[in-house]
Amino acid sequence: MPVREAGTAPSSPPGQTEGVLVLRPARPEDAAAVAAVHVRSWQAGYRGLIPAAVLDDLRPEERAARYRFGEDDASAPATVVALDDGAIVGFATTGPREDPACGELLALYVDPDAWDRGIGRRLLAGARVALARTGSERGLVWVLAGNARAERFYRADGWEHDGTRRHAEVWGVAVEELCYRRPHLGDGLGARP
Image 1 (tube, rainbow, N blue to C red):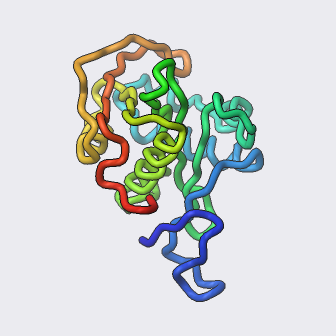
Image 2 (cartoon, rainbow, N blue to C red; image 1 turned 30 degrees about the vertical axis):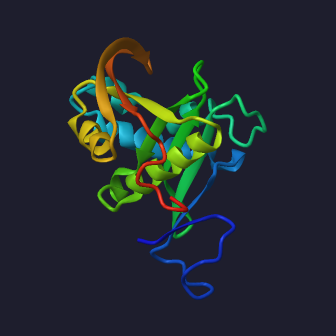
């Protein structure tokens, strides 16, 4: 699936964008669609890692109220959405850390109906570009312990578990997370994600 950033010319004839993945910054009006992707991906991806009752009780409208898209604050997290045929099918959120040379991938989720289509890889490449644009040279991401799918995904892109673990609370559940780092954000990137 070709990818293009919003604002660039489509590679298909006008009116024929099917099969083209568009990455663009999230807007306030995207909150409900992003929250739906977030909840559905948690419910599918974390089944067996998070109690089923917690996953089944997640509501997109509760998640949507927490997002702050479209703010013009360089110190705030930034979210990019992936649109396939105009529908949001994934998102990635990046943010700065105390160490300005190391940015953090705070979230990357793809709707389960769109898994295994390369959307996550494109979002990850876009997130790396976004972090590099803020001056970060390296990146880190926290992965839920036991999430073998996510671990394979990040390792395939050059991220490595550095041995660090932390205990956190996510949506009211105590979890253990593993720190994955990428020493060079720009490795393997072309001119565009």
